[in-house]
Image 1 (cartoon, rainbow, N blue to C red):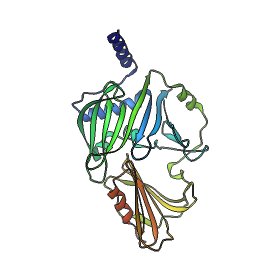
Image 2: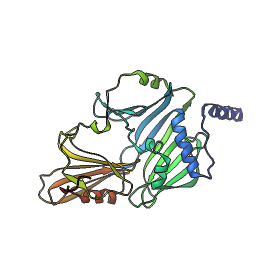
Image 3: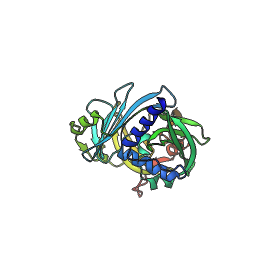
Length: 326
């Protein structure tokens, strides 16, 4: 009876999964199948994010209706945080019920980005190698390890469902291959039809979409400082002046990214007379805050090693009059 039931479930999974996992002899093929599975399948995956601090549960729901890709990411604990993506427009409901929508934007977090970043760009920064097989969610997974090609990045282990190719677990490793953060699936629902929630999201009225650069209503005045050093592969995507959402403190802001990881840099005048430096870690995220000799407070936040964040912060300096690029 058990064998018959198992065979029935296997047949069902094959029926609802149009993507088949590639051979485990080729890590690039497995990564390609992972990205195809994310693009093509209808699924709901409950995740537990863990690092330093209490575990954080999330629910990721994705599907397709009338040729439109719909994604919903919901934080299940703490203050309400919700994200809705319709094709390339992402709505953020993070600090309040009103929210905002950005064009050509992505969902926050490494888990979804690694499944959407062009494979060529991913492999330009990481070497992919087979790391064996294991089980997660009661399912066999092929493990692909992403080894950073520079010391300024973390490494990752992707747990890819052998049956469908879906990413079910993501481990973040430091330079000593120690686990610093993890996103692990604890419940998975696959379906041949989108979840009812996505049908509602297809027609719900969301905040009007703005260009990405307008997301935080920056002041038009040009920034007066620059980051003298960024890790290889990181490019500046935004630089402006705005006020912090909760404190209304005016800051100059820079966001740089390698496509997977974002690093945010905030610069504000300091009331401190003495140079100081502070380091805070939460899982894979490091926050470095320092007051430099120019009495500017520089804060760097990102999922990068501590030394990388510190080096970025220490490189911040007044912009040269003849230098118009960050």
